[in-house]
Length: 597
Image (cartoon, rainbow, N blue to C red; front, side, top):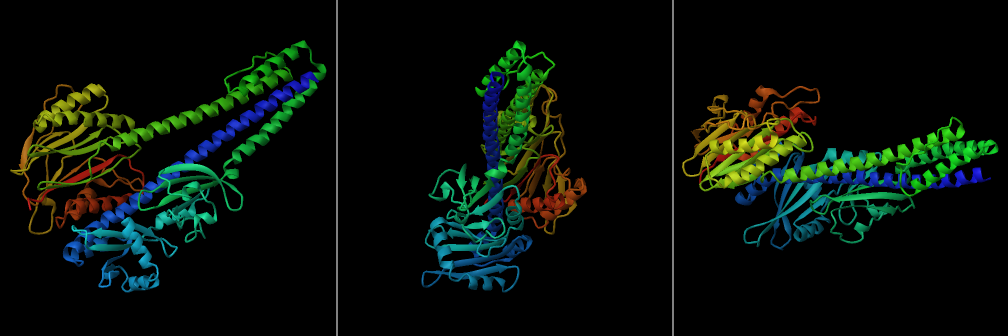
């Protein structure tokens, strides 16, 4: 009885504790995974919608300036295939909003939409007046309606722009989610995108999370709730940061813990085998067997206290020895799973921290300093990148920085951080580009000891004379885009390759030469890194230098503003890329001498 009951009790305790720990760990993993997914989707929705407003902002400005849509607005609108309509509403004689102007892809379609929404428009306008921005999906499809309120400088005349945009990919992603259900909702719980049958309904018809019961300020969270039908759900949410949109993911707790159920069944079978062996051995056991079981009992007590590194040292070839060996295997496996989970959480946390820190290294992507307009684009190939660009004003000069560290990922990101730190100090010295690169070279060399190097291009633009002094450290030569009377041609692209010096970090005492060129009013300069020609499509075909030059000419053929130039060029390489992963970081920016107005 003693030999039978003692292992039975101790192994039962071990089984319960081990399964409980595994279940808690599995729930934490599911919460982490679903929170990551909801956060990623929220960021993607925000990026897409901000991209729409970024595209339509010139159209808004064009209308507010001219009080009508000009050919500029028509051109931008025609080139954005996701946009269906832009309607302008202004205050009428009665004080209510009235339609003032319209851009649409399908003639007559927008008037039908406005007629069907007639009873809801006053509510939408009231929400736009209160919140400045409202997002609606009134037709339960992939069309998103953005109401953007814009006031003039006196804040006495308000204009509401209604933008209708197709978000087919986003809608499909919310609809096609399988392992967990995803919803894009507004603060009142109305489902905009989600599984079949849910758009147009309220999330409260399925589950009512705590963040919907009041205006919670928390941007992201996770909780366990009961669905309307009594099913336990693991719920995660992330606010998109655009209007009142929230991304919610739900997972049935029973399905999430399916692996636990399998483990329970296998553990029960294994447990039954162990007990059977113990009962048989109890009929023939001697004092040696009792001693071995005592060791096993002590070990299970340690496991119950959370010590999964305990091992049983039983040197017998009988069933008790097998029992101890199986116990050691089980304890080692549980310990391994816990260590893997902790290590994964640590690595993900460190990568996220590194990504967050690196994002602070980059300047605003749109700027205007005196006569110089600046617009840029950056997309890393992994969580952290090795490209870096920057601009700053020192006295009457604007310094333009761009560099590319060897490779990409965390090591390259550390070098870009060192470059940013060094540049912050160098900026205060008010020295020439070549002397600045000599100081930056010493900093990079001291940090990497020659193991990681960095190509770099540094230029200074004189706000009074328009002279551009530059120094190149084996970086891709930027192109000076000369303003001409006709359309841009290849001969109007002038590579700034008069000087070329060693890479940063190659040798500590490298000396750098510089030269200069005049940038007239209307001229622009295109800076880039070597990741752009290397962009591949899903078939592993690189974009190449020839297509790169053709796209650069096409994007600047009519000498547009820097924002349009960047957007057009980005559309060109994204069409070739077709969503394929990047093989290297992509960075470029455009500066243009627009003159003093």
